[in-house]
Image (cartoon, rainbow, N blue to C red; front, side, top):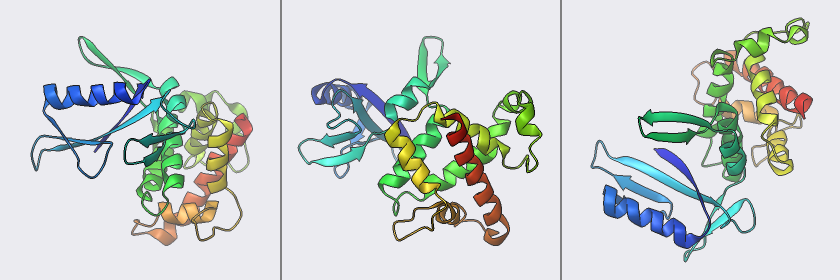
Length: 231
């Protein structure tokens, strides 16, 4: 599945955009999900979610599809766009692609919005945190002598610390509150909040849960420290 954020001024503009995709590019509508389009046929068909945001948000951070009233949370979309990377995919075509810090912010927000349905977002977040140091971020580490000299320095988790710092630059007061709620040391409750509960959900699909859970907890603590020390 591919997710696309679409900055538009009104629902009329969004519908015009969707209509152009359907008429010119052979996309098909999904009768059950307002934001979804399909292209191609099984098994090669593509599932595309179009999430409009911008001036049509009401209130800011939420969209309501007419006429059904289906709601989606768009918190973090504008911040992710501002930090997006420009990628040239053809000689005459450049697109904005979400950065890893922007992706991590959106994953937290998506999970918070629907925790029972979006637990795979936490697994994705764990992958981003584990891989962040290798994603061309080594220079940030080697330029920070203070960080490398810390007594509890751990190369396995320091990437999460750097990710947290870069996420902090994108956060609004609202999105920071959402994320820090899931990184709180308070015990997780029925709605799956708290750092240890977040780590458990992250590792739920792992065949080596007992071995890796402590490391996931340490990684989330580093992520939280990165956010708070930069903010």
